[in-house]
Length: 410
Image (cartoon, rainbow, N blue to C red; front, side, top):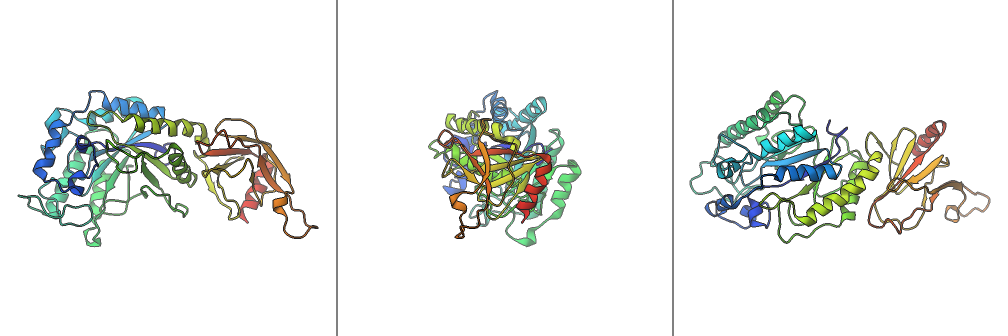
């Protein structure tokens, strides 16, 4: 189940905007007229095995679910919908949601679907210059908020009825006017898929938060799924993308997961559905690291102490020390802990490191008669692991773990 067994997922921003290769919001950000933008649909050419490629990449990276943009802001639909011809089925005869849902069912991958509230194509959608809406309606549009909601519900009905189990619904761009809140839409969603999780970007409050491209500093009060793209400029395919470093992405994953959050790492497939080589390399690099350290996140609880400048998680008799920033030295000092673990190792590689409880010069407080001893973990191979986030695994005797938790609680 998401947020328990499934913590790491692949976000897929795919649509006809890939043809432009600039940005998934190109129609809006460049002011392209509707009649010109829709020509991208004629050049949209998903390869027969593209969904298999996506799922293979996700599995290789240790991911257990995917979130797919069934409809982004441009209104182009990637499933066989009866409510518009502006769809992948109309232009190519394909149903990508079907192909992806079938692939997920075959491989045991969980599936979440993304659906944008703004729509730059549907004639009923209200485009009035507000948040992620076109500056004005397209020629010939007949904006009507209720008719658009009816259209939206009809399409959601298709997505949540015809494609098997959908584990989560990712709405995007909530209304900026509280008067537009509508609890009935999420109620309708749950009536079609009992047990589905709904995010916080719809017409009413959902089940989980979705911070985007940020790592909140405060502890998570509830279910949280952060999302970040491998590229700086766009979520959809961009031909000249600026890619984040692998280490930056690892740091982001660690800071979110240490607090108990899920993580969606995004790629934007090219017009033929293939994933750019550099984007795939990013996912594989982060995934290779994640598979070595995921033990420290799964079923682990967030632990905090104001004087310990490292992230910490705990599971059973193990305390995991997370070093998302590049370590300053080959040792960490765990004041106020005075308990020595029975075993200390680098989770990334499995190699042992030294653990001691001792009086160090840095613990001197100005009184030579007071010689406090605290836990020190040393011999960390920081210069060999500069390209990844290091996580230490400290295993304590069962009888000592209670003392560790008491000291951390002070």
